[in-house]
Image (cartoon, rainbow, N blue to C red; front, side, top):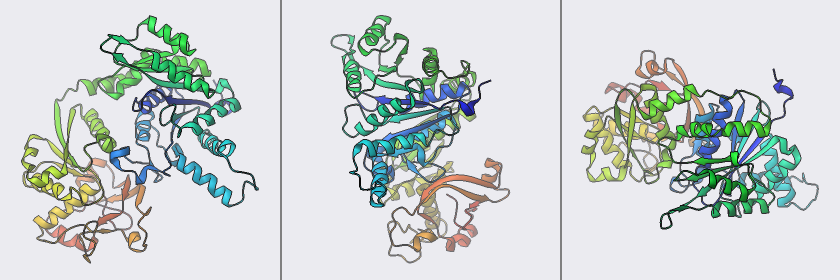
Length: 496
């Protein structure tokens, strides 16, 4: 039996070319799953080339969801895919941006740690990037690092240079480069074209990186002849040219890669231990997603950022996984809360449940209140997350408790005692930036409550990202009118 304590960690780097949004995150996560199935200890990491220190200040319309880790890091949504696929909770160390790297280097320079040296991209920025990779090594057999952006982007160059150097330092036998690319179909010619892939690989080779594996996104099957052509012009083994076609659910992707023996290729090239996985449990899960035995349910998600569904990626996947657990198909309709301000709440009669997710700012909030009011009056199952919980309290306060002025401090700050108020820690600071409750936080549940029954526990932990909570001054009046407060945080705040 292999002594893992003496086995060097292996490193896999996933890059993308030709166009963005090819699915590097899903490809990397799928490979991670296959290696986990082989009995390996795997962790994953995302390098984002933008200058923001983290995505916490980015618009959901530009960047999608902010995924929050247990330790309170605001990270790229791909980390959600990583966690769901490899079954491991990740942390701040698993998402590194250019902004964070430059911040670290500049801080060290200001402290004089470079002893008067001229601070440059090489070696100082690239050394900081390599250190971020090494930090994940302890306790893991494999570290998979996804490089954000597209080969050829100026922003990505320091990361690509860093991983080129990294291979030189740790050895070719311990590193593997996987390149995700596009094989477009030209309808007028009726042909798949390999030239964009050839150019993308050539761009990588010009900076010293030779891909070991190619994952080719395509709308049509790759013939054996085309695989040989791709292999010939990119200097990649034919068996390492992997076809990646669209599938009905992202959870099929590991199965498609496994069928093409991607994990065998990776294990062989890196000398990884472990046997070929059967993937039986994963196949059963995919089967339940594709053909559930208990019919379907329709859920309306009424939010502020529905124009980009990636803004609510974890909400979407949580609903999908809820369907898996109950062997039902979950059909989700994404509805703009602003539309409900114009009187369209009756459309909720078509659904089995209503979910209102989080968000910031005033826009669309009154529409959320209209949707909640209709759901409460018609006994439509409702679930509110963050802002969704806050708007539910506001609606109940107005409609049931008769508190006509019930509103949130976020959009009417001049009111002295709002129903939704800043957390205590917020009242003690003047700068609201970076002071949210972030990460895993415990909550105590009331014995006998529905929440305690669902969780099968009276103490739970969930991840938070908010700076407002229910004003405890209204707790008694809300309970007198029939609202059960089933969960509170350790500091007395209401659980979201």
